[in-house]
Amino acid sequence: MQLSIDLKTKDIISLISQMSLNELEKVKNSLVERELYFKKFKKDNVEDIIDDFKKENYSDDFLTDLEKGLKKSSIYK
Image (cartoon, rainbow, N blue to C red; front, side, top):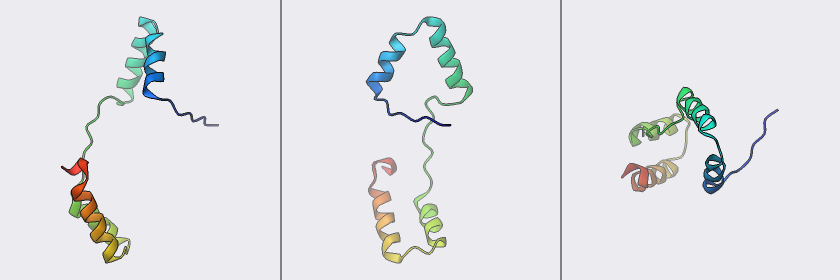
C-alpha cells in the first residue's frame, strides 16, 4: 500500500521545527543516505531531446514548437 499526501513547504518547516535534535539528525542521515539533498539538475542537450522525440515519430510541427519552447525555457537560459 502506498500513501501520498501534498504538503506545503511551510508545513514541512513547521514539522521540522518541532523535532528534537536527535530526530533532525535521523532525517539528515536519511536524506544523505538516499542522496536527496541539493542535487543539481543536469540538463540534456536540446538537440538530443529533439532527436529522442524524432525517434518516436512526433510531427515536425510539434518538434519545432518543442525546440523553441525548450530554448526559451528558464532552465535552458
